[in-house]
Length: 386
Image (cartoon, rainbow, N blue to C red; front, side, top):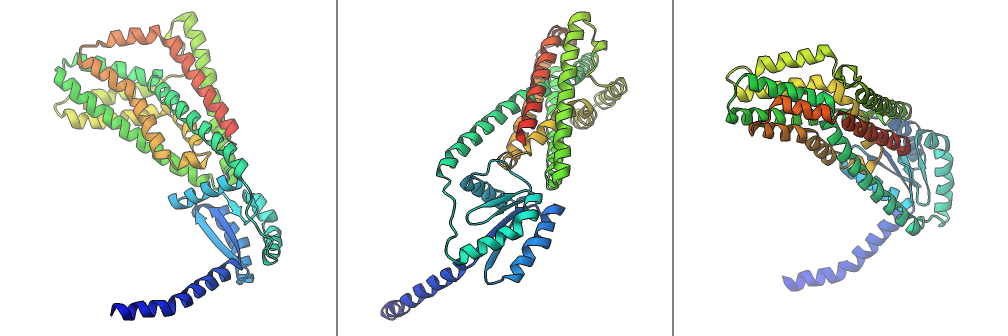
């Protein structure tokens, strides 16, 4: 049996090799056109429907069309690899790659795509198609990507902490501790409430971020809408930065929290106080803490979202950041709840609400200046992100 299998393999192996080479040669006769776009983007689908698929049907023996969905990890990873090989410096929702060149963006592909494919098809048939020599570009791209990644990591660190210590969140912390003190809760009860409340805030804020990220990424497939989102986020970051510096100046001069512009509206504060009083005054500590954390996070989003939204928009501007978005969001939200967690632990060890209020007022100018600087950096990033 072994002899028979060895004999057959010796007889047919050369035939199989020749057949494999013939198939590969046949495949290489075609011009490979790779197109990257989102499956939920109207303009991305239009490029395939109006331009690429008709060309592939018209020249079935000369064009091999490969389409990739950038909403999947595999599609996005392949896109990043090709961007690196071709030296692409700016990403877009629609990208088209040929053996020796590429087109970026809906307008460029729809305007020049057909002529470019036909010309490359002729040169490919003549045997002149080639891949670009991107060796020198790769180093520049590598350094640029690493600096962008580290820059965004540091930005996440600063923005997450700034979001966690902004006056909106601190005001709620102060009232929460004062309410627990008035209820004369035991230390063990304070710990249970603190952990359940903080965990719920984390999960709720994280879920909100995931939803925003998904919506923004889907809308970014439309060039006009993408630019509207980008400049809207820039405007929001710039306004928050200006108001933060304004609040720092006014509070340094008057010492009155009533004069601060960036804080929760009075009606929202009243509603938050009602939620805390209604859910943390009974015996069901865990359920009450979870309900309170969920509702308070939604109400606070009116203020905290002023930082969260521009941050998420900045994250979605580049593919290499989008693909690690879950890790960035998880880290951001940990930083967001870290001050709350520290305060709840200190409350367990006897921190009084009036002590926290005094420390907050004492450092209000510093907090506002830091918030203004962080939001200024975020606004600059959105301008440079392209």
